[in-house]
Image (cartoon, rainbow, N blue to C red; front, side, top):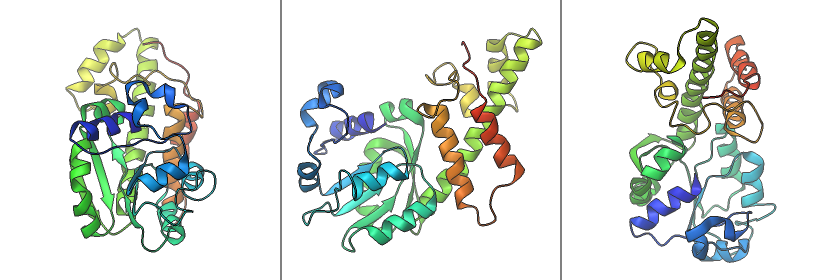
Amino acid sequence: MGLPMARAMLREGFDIAGFDVRPVKEFGDFADRMIADASAFSSHCDVVICVVRDERQILDLCFDQQALFAIEDCPKTFVLSSTVSPHVVERLRQRLPGNVALLDAPMSGAPPAAIAATLTFMVGGAKFDFERHLPAFLAMGKNIHHLGKLGSGMTAKVLNNFVAASSVVAVRNVLKQADGLGFDKKVLLEVMAKSSGQTWFGSNFSAIDWSGEGHDPANTIGILEKDVRAFVDALPEGPEPLHEAVIDALRALPKLEK
């Protein structure tokens, strides 16, 4: 996600640098804008947009391994675009230096929308900080929502992602059932796209490169499970049976040949 987002901002004239734990050579024509040293990257950038996978990687990036915010001359704004529990946003605010602005700005749309610069951003945080960085969001996305106080964006994202994960489970299930009933899966997807069974996942099934994946902690289905767990973590009264059933169903997904 990060690479096409960076390219989108570069096209709009932003001065962009990238940092990743992977070798710089893996970033192709963007390699000359990658900074391999974390301290040098931290000193170079006023604003960091974070798209790492989970809380552990966020803590490593900010404080522990790469420790971007452990130096005196650290970035002045941190934009958290990873999907995690809203409680992580609260803990992050407590640990970041007081003079560092924080926005939670998870996005939706997957890599195709990142490439097309049509992502949807759900943003929480101070209105002043949001408006200051709105041009950057507009460079990467088409629908930008400022939802209120810090944590609001992440709350919206985990709620949205539970619906998205549920639709993945439902679509994959009916495609399996269609095989058993001798019904053409492609025809079913075409019918559903124009009917009450329409979902983003089903309507874009052939274009989504991970739509046929089986569960693996390292792939997108594994990330969906992580996102549902982030949703459950945010619930004051804990999970309901439906939430646990979706997690179990994601974990049981086999690989599907398209």
